[in-house]
View 1 (spheres, helix red, strand yellow):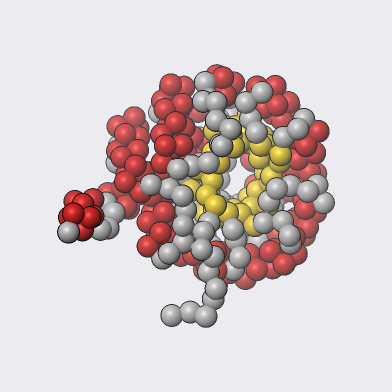
View 2: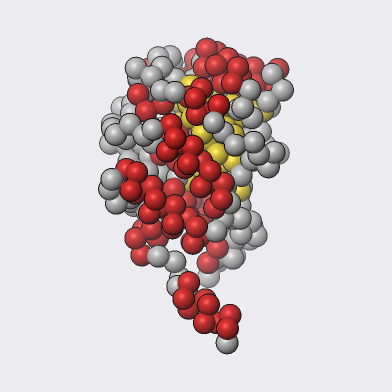
Length: 314
């Protein structure tokens, strides 16, 4: 089938409480956000992007970030991540005393960077480095995502060399990892394999994380290509919810249920319980009052739970 040597396990970051919800018009109550986080932990999530510290006028769904943090469970085995865009956001996150890791965002193009966070692309790189260093000074860890790594909603194609230069610059701040994000879901497996390989080699031994949107149905194929190219951490969102308010046409993230199903069936351990993920999908669909995009949430796993029980009793 292939001569690639795939890893035996993969680390996953659950992003539904932040990226999954931020583009939804119906405001989700703090209590439901906390229940989502608790259920994510129950399914096996050990790194969770719980909120973002941004201006609530720009992203109304993220209002009450401090309240979410105040209600987080006490778990020494879970890393709670707060997304921040600038020093003010970083200080807000640090002040909660509940965030373990700051996530910064750098953007590959000036037009998207201005729309997303009011600064140039180069400015977003410097801001990311500053956020990572602020996290370290506060006794936390920091990481960065390079948004629109595979294409920009405003400027179109993005040169691989630009992404590579940004990754090398951010690596100077010693983050725990650097993520490549397909913010608007335009990537293809060949492009993903090539870019992940180049960035992996450039920033080693720092890990490469990947963040894919399934806007055009290529999310899982891209994720598989990224793992084959050496990415060791992947983002996913329960239910497949997600999108960027500042990126026209962006749609949902790859669904945690779909990723776990694919990887576990392929012999790559994730640490997640698929049956509990499907149950959480159904609960979240009730909260959102709509069916969620995740395919496994609709179709169910395989073998079916009743088939598993029959095999165990045989």
